[in-house]
Image (tube, rainbow, N blue to C red; front, side, top):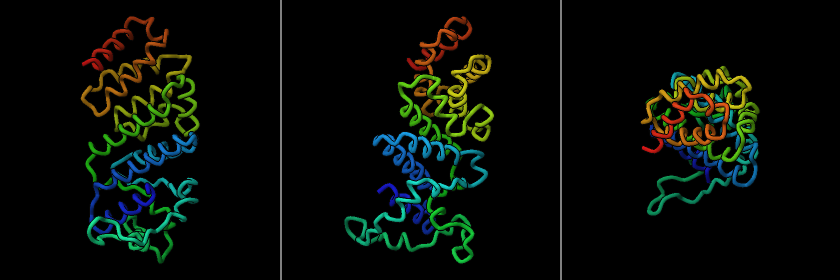
Length: 254
């Protein structure tokens, strides 16, 4: 059903200009990652979640080019998804799945006659170019919250290993996400939280604490980071960093 929703949204955006549904398509991709995590396919869930995060790099200037069809979930399952010829809707036949699947995907500059892009690939591209930046940033923040839930109870070293396995080895790996301050800072902190040398880590903590607490999901990120700080003797033994932790506590409490 989530795969069908992705296809329906794509059709409605292309044929009727409902650009806001691009965010619903992001949410459906997150739902698919949740499903994979819930049934124990953790590695696949992480791959999908981080493939989605990659789509936000350097946005909104460029359309997201990530090839979701290379992930098994799409290349193997999408082709067998029922087309459901029955009408969708309680009262009248306003949309039928065969119309959705039969319509060529052209909104990503794909010419089906020239074969410029695989049709399956075009089903799962994302395009943020017609959406306000604040909305895009808020959506990425929500994906970060999902990452928090996926890694709940894991040690800083285990979280860093997950990030590294999905292509995020250092702050430099995140440079395409720097425009999204809270998401970038949080992921950078997680990457460096297990470093033996804490200079980069503590500098990131300071920068994170300077962000406005009104940002979307800032409290969720602060709460998650605060729990880490409580377990880190390296942080709490430094008075200056303790002040930063206290600032986080106050922000979360309020």
